[in-house]
Every structure is written in structure tokens, then in C-alpha cells.
Length: 635
Image 1 (cartoon, rainbow, N blue to C red):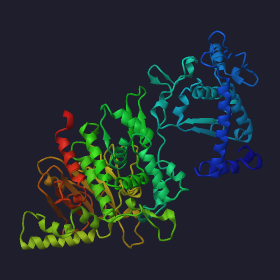
Image 2 (image 1 turned 30 degrees about the horizontal axis):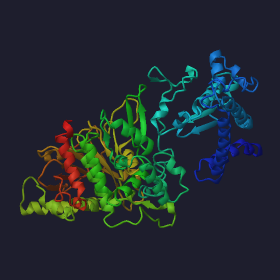
Image 3 (image 1 turned 90 degrees about the horizontal axis):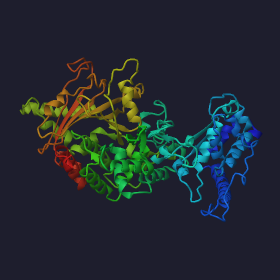
Image 4 (image 1 turned 45 degrees about the vertical axis):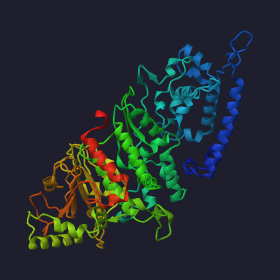
């Protein structure tokens, strides 16, 4: 870096450095860390040779003393920190390696004078990121404690004074292990080295890093191209974009490896299912904390909140469609679907996984696994489809591809759904010949209305408030933009528990040949209401309106309302569609598109023929509904 600063402008040097060092497969990066490892190994040898044996303080043995390692006050600018007490100076002086750390910092700063003398005093000029930082707090057999020495050096150079304020060096401690938030210095050192005191975190850990920093802007790619690998890797953590030097297949293999982790193979089924299906871990369960800590450390789960006393912990899987594709690939490999569902049932039985109260989890499994199996009607050789232009990153990930709503419903409800459902629909209870002909006509109109409609969801995301919330002074996304953003990241929505009328939203897109029609005006929705009671709720289907104040998703595009009575045993599939639609205001509120209303009951292969493709799936879905009525272990 210093050589680059000496040979060119500061901006060029920084750009070259960041370009080479932020690429995980960069040759310069590999060489840099090879030199760093060599330097570290040599210094560690020096420390080992300087540490006395454990019998050093016994009679006849020598021990390290300050006299043997005199403090050079000119080289060690500790006296400039007026906040240090004399006892703290003495304790710091006894820290093995601390003097060398100070010297190394000074040499680094002197070699980067052009950087530190630049404008912008309060902006970070150098960021040192230490991954897996919890390992620094582990005391070595020789009592060498890297974290205490490093933190003390950082504290000394950021504690105040005109010389210090010019440095603008930030040090980031990152870790997947929760123990990093409770690091503390050994007792022989001064108390101010501690970051944990009085049962509270003196320095609360920062976890609101945000997501999607590398995502394409909403209008940066056509809605018909969002399944392209180059677009999908922009969502979630920046890690995926940073390893784009690999092939798409290698990228998915890396995602699978990271999701599975290297510890506790028994966590893999729950990790795979949690990432796509929003599994809720029951608070207070005796295995919950251990499972969550392990999942954060080894299975890409993310901690989003922790209380100061560390008694309250909130973790989740963010919306990452690339990781969802990796999870889907693993779920449908080597009969893993049945095995993973059995593992899920075991955790539901022991109370660790919360199943909800109205079939929410069952419904998430039902609709997304149906899409998975539709895509995999025939064996897949690759998890992606090659691009027509031959560009690898324009290839489409199969689990993010658009699929026709017409074909999807045929797969879910049966090949004759569009023909037979209309005949069985009860149009006002009248089954005359005229009514049947009217129903058939409505079927044809429904098929025509959704002929160019598609879905593309690869995972579920949860909401913590209503779809439409009136907030003073806060602008809410318009319904079309909200829907299109979910389409772009291939996510479907699990609504919050208090959401009126509906429980789920699946974004849809209408593809036609009108070049003047923008993507925002092409989106619509499938709204789903889950019911798990033993009595039918068919009448509630007509109450679902998307112009309700808590939804506000009205548009001129056709949409779908589905009510599923998951707790019933009698199989039924019916739908209705308006015979005529004028686009004028109706009793449902403002002008809205025509609605295809589908009613289905019972979890069996008569209602959902695709369930016959898995032996375990229908059993698990029915058992989850049973657990809602009679919680396992008396919960």
C-alpha cells in the first residue's frame, strides 16, 4: 500500500488496493495474507521464546520483569494519555507484546502519511476488520492474550489528543460466535480493559449492518430477468457478490457448504428449512438458546438483537434468494425432503419449533414445496438454465424462474382444475344446466385472464406489521412498488398475526407484448387465508378484499384470493370468477381488477394431488395441524 501511495495519487492507490483486497480470489490478496502469516509466525516464535515456564516464579527460577524488557518512553507514547493511572501504566507495561504492538502501529501510520494527512478528519481513513474475533480472547498456553493487547493499543491511540484525532483508524471486530460480545481481559490486568461489567455490556455489539448493499436498483433490470444469477447474488449479505469470481455452480456449492456448516449435522435440516420457510423457535425452550447460538456460528443465521443483560436474543435468516436456491437444491437431493420433514416433526414434538395457531407453517410448506416439486417434475441436472447469449451470470436459477399460474394451479389442484372446478362451483346453490354453462364460461374467462400471469417465489419472509399501515410523517411504499420489490427478490410474504382478512401474499407478474406498459403496472397478488379449525370457513372467502385499509393493494390487474380449510377431512376444491367485469367501482371499494376466488379443504391427495409425490409430506402437514389443536408435551 505504501509503495502505491508513493508512486501515484491517493485516490488511484486506494482504488487499486480496494479492488485487489476486496476480491477473495485476488492474487494480490493471497500474497498479502501469505506474507502476513509469515510475519505472524515469526513473531509468535519470538513470544514463545520470551515466555517463562510455569515454574518461573519458584525458587531458583527466573521470571520476566520490567527490567528485562525496559520501556522506551520515546518509542512508547503512553505518557500522552493523561487518563491512565500509574497502576494502569505499570499493568500495561507488563503486557507481553504490547510494546511491539505500539511500535507496529507507529510504523503503519508513518508508512501511510499521505493517507492520514488527507482531508476529512472525522471520516474513517483506514478500517481494520478482524473476522472470527472471539478467538482473540482465548488465552494461549503461554498466557499470551492477543485481544487485551490489541484493545489496549487501540484505546491508547483513540483516547484523545490532537495527534490521535488525525488518525481516523477504525477497527471492526466481527464474529459469528456470540461469545465475542462478552470478551473481558484477564484479572491481572486493569479493570478498564474490560468490556463487560455489572452484568451489562459496556460496549453493546453492533448487528444492524443492513442488507442488499450490492443489489440492483428496482428499475435496473427487467422484471422478466430477475432470475438471472448476476441479479440474485446482489440480495442479502455482500459476501455473495464478493465471490463472483467463482462459477455459478461453485457459488451454489459454497452457499450449501456455509449453510450446512462444519459442526452438528443434526442442525442441517432445520437450517435448510428455516432459511426458506421461516421456522419460529419457541422462546424458553431448553434447547433454543444452544440451537440459535450454534446456528449463528455455523449455519449462516444472523443475530439482529441482544439485550444488555444477554437474556433476550433475536435471530433470523434474512431474505437471500441465492441461499434459498442452495437450500432448495439440498432439500430435494437424495430423498432429503422426507428426512428433513421427519427432523422438523421431531423438533415440533419436543416443543422447540412453534407451529402457530391457524396453519401458518403448514401453509408455507404446502405452497412453496408445491412449487419446488413442479419445477422438479423431471430430474434436474443443474440448478440453473443457461442464458441464450452464453453469458454465465445471465443464466437463470431454476428456483427463481417465472412459472405460469395456469400450470402451477394445475399441478397443485390437479390437471383438470380449470375444467372441473368450475363445474363443481356452487353458483348460488343452483346446479342447473344453465348454471353449469355459466360456470364453464367463467372457467374460460379465468384462464384467459391469467394466461400471461406468473409466480417466481423461492422463499418466505415475515412481516411484523400490517401490509398497509398509516404512519404520520412516514412515507409507505406504494402497493405496486412493494409487490414489485418482492418479485425482484423472489420472496413471498407471511403476514403478521394481526393482519385482517389474509395471512399470505405471493407476488404475480403479467407478461404481455405491450411495450408501453411499465413493470410497476404489471404486478398483482395472490392472497391466501389459512384456516385450521374443524368447521368450514367457506363464507370467509368472499370477505377477502385487497382494498381493505390494512392491505390497500387495489389495481386493474386480475388477482387471486384463496381460502384453505386445512383442518377439515372432507376434500373440496371450488372456484368462482366474475362473468363480467367493467372496471367500475364496486361494493368492495375503489376500482379493482377481477378476482379468482378458490376454496380448498383437507390435506390429502384428492385436494392436492401433488402430495402423492412425497410419502412424508402429507403426514407432516396433517400432524402439524394436529399439534396446533393438541400441543405436544402438554404445551
